[in-house]
Image (cartoon, rainbow over all chains, first blue to last red; front, top):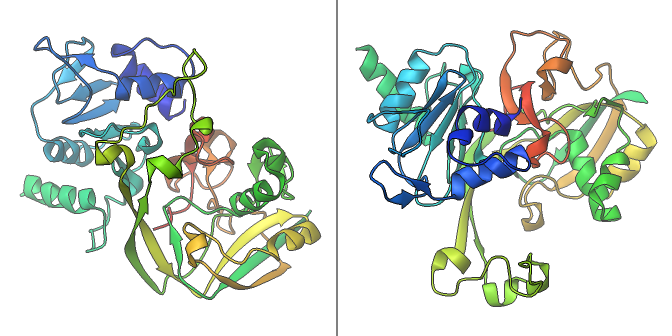
Amino acid sequence: MNTYEFFNRYFGRHLVEQQGKPYEATARALTASHRLASGRKSRLSSGWAIVKPQGATMQLRLAASGINYDNRTRTQAFAFELEHWAQTPTLFMVFDKKPLSIAHLFVTVDLRAVRICTPAGVQTFNYKQNPSELSPHYHRLLFKKGIKNAS
Amino acid sequence: MEKLIITATLATPFVTGGGYMTFDAILAGTLFDQIGDVDEAHAAIPIRRTAGLYHASAARFEVLDYSAIDFVANLRANHSLDPSLIAKKSDGRTLHKAIGMKRRRDFGAVMSTYSLVCADSISWFVEGDRSQIDSLISPIAFIGTRRASGFGEVSSWNIEEGTLDGLTGSNNEPLRPIPEVMFKGDKTTLRVDTGWKPAYWHPANRSICYAPEPLL
């Protein structure tokens, strides 16, 4: 199963019709407007999502069913997931005003190459190593959060 | 097909946007410049191929210095884009995506961040046709991202006899991204979601692979 089949099976199918190639359906899910729980419509333009074979969890409250909704910040949610890593493929997504491009979607399958997918690009880092000054932003952020959670 | 070690001696630092810079990707780019057709260019790569997987390793180099580097590309919608190249709506005339002239995000400057790597040389393990590879790489004067801006200047190429097939190393570690189902080596090594054959940017060519450490 490639990245887009994974995205669609565990997340995208709750948001858009699954027509065309898998990456086309993924692009539609990431760029289309979706009905919010409040009744208004919005793109995936804030918050975060974590997608696993066990299901998808996200912060932005959509009207869609089949997704878990969670109020934690992205750092709290990602750090918890990495600290309790269950060896299952996981997609970490950050949403912002600029849509998340399908080119920036990568599944994380190994803590030695965690991939945080953001609209500005994908940040790849080894979560088992301490970050350096040049490490990606999320590596430093999640490492700090992991230390805090552990203490 | 021979087992080879190919080395590029660098005169300037090179720039990378991540990925693995496999040797087949470098040849694919060169061949595309010559042929102008993606499929033909990939079919002409003179490297051994097994079920679509090229026997060519990722770039291997010793980092002397490393930093992030930003580039700003200025897109001027009025004269940077040829409207005939933009997809049309079903009427065949209206542009599929209108070019906005009011908001900077529609036509302004775009900043991208890459990694700048100082290294003396880059080498690859490859199994391929020596003479064809030699004739393809001889004219390559720059490699990597932003090569048109002077980064990644190659002062010389060297091809010598090797012992590895470009897929797995002496400890059975992967030398390049290899899809899980095709990998016969050490399965405790790193797994990563990445492109495994050219065109590496194409979403359909991604898979969970056993792979070396990604480039910086």
